[in-house]
Length: 239
Image (cartoon, rainbow, N blue to C red):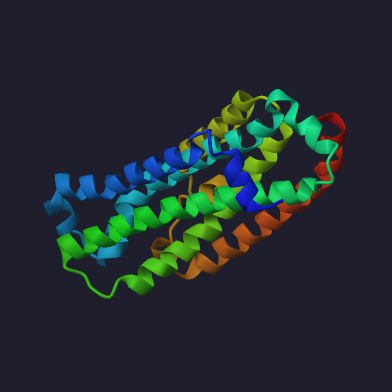
């Protein structure tokens, strides 16, 4: 199943425009934050990127997860609406291929949002801190955040593929998001490595523990991917 075909399916849902608008809204957060109190930011110790990310990424990470939940809810709802899933079962289509294409599309949309956010943070570092040579640091943060986003992306698509009702998927995602928000202050490695909590971490703050976060994200992504392959026969039978 091609990603281009999935793009055609969501053409009339407004999801792409919604994600782009959400990304621009998220990108405005660090700019407005530092513009409202520049003296506070400039008085902090550390590199410009470290300061900006530490002061903004909790909010940006939660927005990223919220957009992910909405996107996942819509991507499989269009298959269950009007009995489309039953019709697809009569076609020579790979359910695993459909899941992979939808997941990659959702991950790519998340990547666009991440790029807009990091471009905004880079602009803030250049404009208010007169920082230069930011490209490599921003690319490293982008790569790290893409990996951190993948487990939550696969998990939400897994939930969405099992729920015929869009609101059930949305509700489960919001519950998981609030669970992360309420436990975010707990200093526990298990809590920090929860799939949704990974999106709230950053490369500049992880320091020497970045490899642990990357390993956890990779392992969780593989685990959720294997879970989908196991659940495909069940969905084919009961969807």
